[in-house]
Image (cartoon, rainbow, N blue to C red; front, side, top):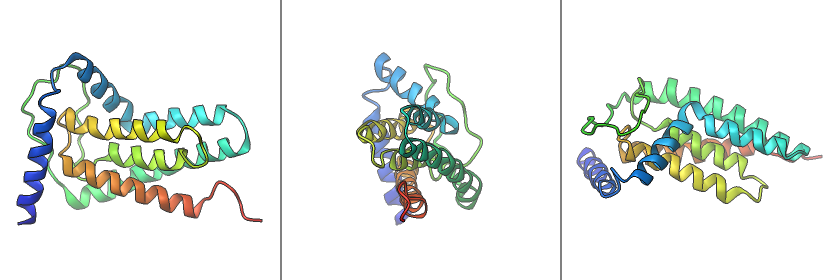
Length: 178
């Protein structure tokens, strides 16, 4: 029953992307976002850019986000994915642009997890919070668009990323209590 509901959800979300697939702008946007999400690269770049803005708060936020997304990657890619072992979507399309084919299982999406963990941590006391979360949404959705993940993998990744980000914020607050 639950498996059927998840499959229906995945199929409907995937079908909703079909109208966009093949559009040059959408292809370029989502394939680029997916590549920037590989190995948490985008979150390292955003973290470094935040640190370069100067000040102890920005530096602490950057270091915390970069370290936390590394820890998140271990938790998701080594532990969670091995527990669930879900297969990736059947490759039904020729990819119009190059894309790395992951070797790990599909559930949960590591791109979505890293994106929302990184956005959660970098947005802390930053006026660019909207940019971080908008980027996280595009990276997460890109994995459905390029058919590397099921929609439910991405939804779970978002929840895991937000949860890990919240835990990291609580354990390592930007401002130290005196």
